[in-house]
Image (cartoon, rainbow, N blue to C red; front, side, top):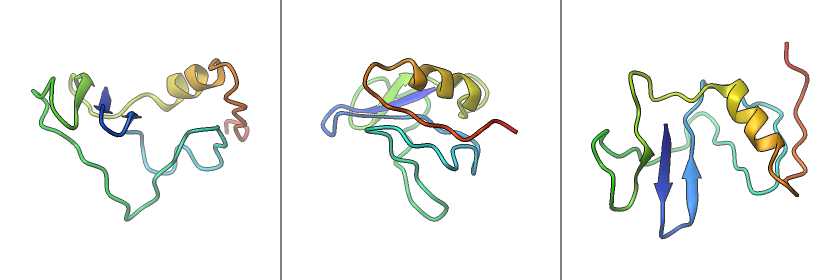
Length: 84
């Protein structure tokens, strides 16, 4: 599932708390406990914000898949801690 905010030109993936600790990628901001993110209703496909890819069951993105995708972005310079 992906939330998009066109006005801010941002994409948001929801992942399990703590699963991105130690990530270092250009242009990636990892929110910490206590920070807020606007989550639209599951049916919203337009507006600010809305779902680019709607949740199906869980709203969480598989952290391992997101990590692999980010590592492939040219120029991201992503560095990740070892996977336990």
